[in-house]
Structures are given as structure tokens and as C-alpha cells.
Image (cartoon, rainbow, N blue to C red; front, side, top):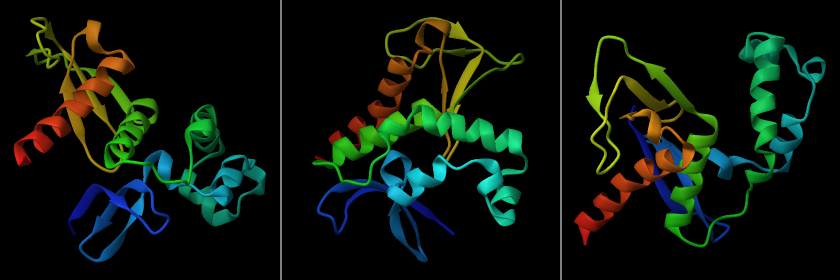
Length: 164
């Protein structure tokens, strides 16, 4: 099954970053994916969950960790669409940087930092868990969220520029 990720204008008239497959309709993901019920669900306590939902989270500790992460960014979740496709993409990239960033050191490899005009070598890989896998090699100077957001946006700019 092939997954497609792209900004789409949905029925509400706004742009959302979406995921769809060859056999399913696209649906909003990231900060754009919630409705009021989902926000209310994020505020629920472990004891209030049904057995099936508890099973998904594996343990109370895992659930509490995930909900603490979601609640930290609660004000960024929304169900209204964006004015432009670019705004929807930026919103999803912010979601990846805020909630799905993993930094790990690779002891057996060194790579040049992928940030433009940086000549440092690094053993640090940054990737984003979630709907699709994005991997970057970045030095200590460029592991801040602002720099990672720039790296995520840059390939989109090149791809869009190439189409014109």
C-alpha cells in the first residue's frame, strides 16, 4: 500500500496537510487532525479509557508520557484549515519538529552536517517519527528546532521550484 502526503483543500475550504493511500481517502494529520472530541480525549485520565484504548498505549506510564507531550502543545491543535498550501505544510513540519524529533549519535559513522554552508562533521542523526521518515545529519550547532524546521522546508522549496 502506497501512502501519499500532501496539502489538500478540503470541504471546509481550508488547506490541510493530509495522508491518504491508494485505497483510502486523504485525511488531515499533524496539528490539523483534531476536532473537539480528540482534544477532550487528550485530557482524559488513564482510568477513564476503555480496555481497547489502554491496550494501544501498552501501559499507564506510556499513556501519561504521550498525553503530557500532546497537552504541552494543545494550543497548536486545530481543525480549521489554513489559507494556503504552504501554511499547511509549515504546520505539519512544526508538528514533526515539536513532537516526533529523535536525535541519536551514530558511533560508527561521520557525515558532513547537512545544514547549508556548514563545514562541520557530525555523528548525530536527526529523524522524525511518524507518517514518513525524514533523516538528517546535523552538527551540535544545528540541532535546534529552528534549524531543523529550515531543513524540512528546504526540500519542498526545491521541489516546488523545479516544477515551475
